[in-house]
Image (cartoon, rainbow, N blue to C red):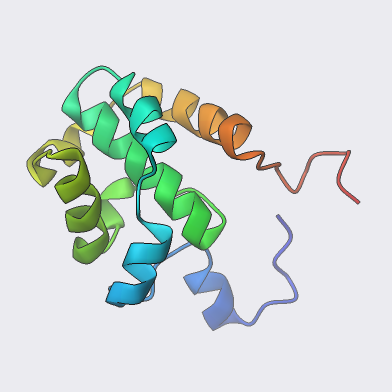
Length: 122
């Protein structure tokens, strides 16, 4: 995505969290619906379930996916872990999961997200 119109500080902060979101933001953007739980439950391994859920909620909040899901703020990880009843200790394993890239495709399709480079956008 072209970002030349952004300041250097805005470019550096694009697609990243600016600290722990407040409780009202956590409850609005990081709440997993029954449909979300069904999608997450279909993933194999706690690391894939947690990683998928973090990418899903992050995409809803930031409008993009995290290159390194481990960089998600502690409050976000805790909120998602509490709902899934999963320990955050499994998250580092997600970094090496081959499925993580397929997850972004699945999330885009589920949420109706489109890439800015899609020729159909305009």
